[in-house]
Image (cartoon, rainbow, N blue to C red):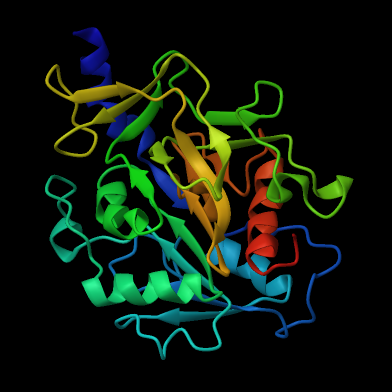
Amino acid sequence: MMLFWILGYCEPLFGQQLIDSLFVGNIQEPTYSFGKGPTILLDEAHHNGMQLNTGFKPLSNVLIKDGFRIKTISSTITENALKNVNILVIIDALAEQNVDHWELPTPSPFTEKEIEIIKHWVFDGGSLLLVADHMPFAGASSKLAKQFNVDFINGFAIDTLEWDINKFNRTDNSLKDHSITRGRDSSETINEISTYFGQGFSTTNKNLKPIMVFQDENMISYQPKKAWRFNEDTTTVLAKGLLQGLAGEFGQGRIVVLGDSSLMSAHLIGKKARPIGINSVETKDNFQFVLNIFHWLSRLLN
């Protein structure tokens, strides 16, 4: 009973989040000449929880410094909209009915046609970064993820022993070896990263390689009917073995899937303004890890 009482109050305890507007990423040598790099298209058409002038702003500033070009789309995703786009970024999409109501059901905000277009665009050579945080975001993007044989779990992945950020590192093999975690040289090698709750997911696609895998026996996936509201009837499954990050080839294209969106921004959490995301001081590899993701999606990394 005590466990669920604590869980029921997670939202006010952990939910105070501000954007770290003063964060400046350290890029000594830009990868591409200013404004000459690959084009990133950020989805803002599906009530996305993170947009260019809100949560994505700190990261967009970093990517622009690195030479990437960033555009946004606020209308239906079409074949024409994806022309001349190198990387499509979709973060925390939501159906309109869930914008102010984080509860079941959590239908897809994407039309069948949009899902078909995105799938074929990736297959033909495009790069997709699909990020879906904890419920209701996981549920909203599950239909799109399924096209790539990725199965989202519409819940919360929580370490019931630590009640803190999730850490992935090479020591316990929760952080896997991959081009993204190796980087271009030793200065870009990733040894440890952290996320902030999020979801766990699985895949049957052998071409998609795990990057972040829950290894702790205390990891539980809670699947409530309403976000942050847990009780004795809440569905739970052991999260050990579930993924929170993967990357791989799909046809001629590439895809990275993340089950936590904190890595796409710089947050200040709680009364003590704890840095979470690419501004983390506890796991400083977060910043380079995210850069490596975009370098891999742009095919700078093989």
